[in-house]
Length: 131
Image 1 (cartoon, rainbow, N blue to C red):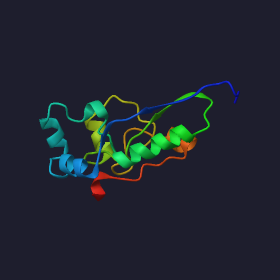
Image 2: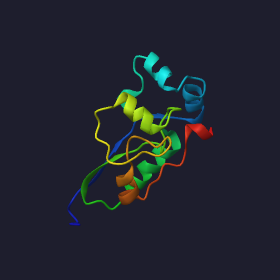
Image 3: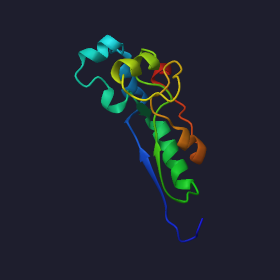
Image 4: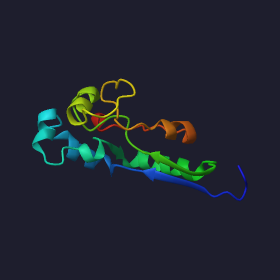
């Protein structure tokens, strides 16, 4: 890296919330396919993603401390979706025309954090399911 090259990290966050907020938002609501179909927004605009506040802070710290070459953009999302239904079914139902690059496992996020994992050594640690 050239010493005069700026280092910029853009972080792309979905809904960011505390443990209490996630418990309230997701713990008592219908997170099934039918439940999402019944709601106008359905979670589709965020690809059913979210992030715990502590994980949002940890990726921000990693981004500030990273030795980047120029500008890099990173998705910052939890490892799982905010839905009760498996991610494969969720994607098939709400995004039937989307290109599938690989199979999704369990409730795996529809958004990849591979770039943040590779360049920032960051991994989301919290799930609304464990709250």
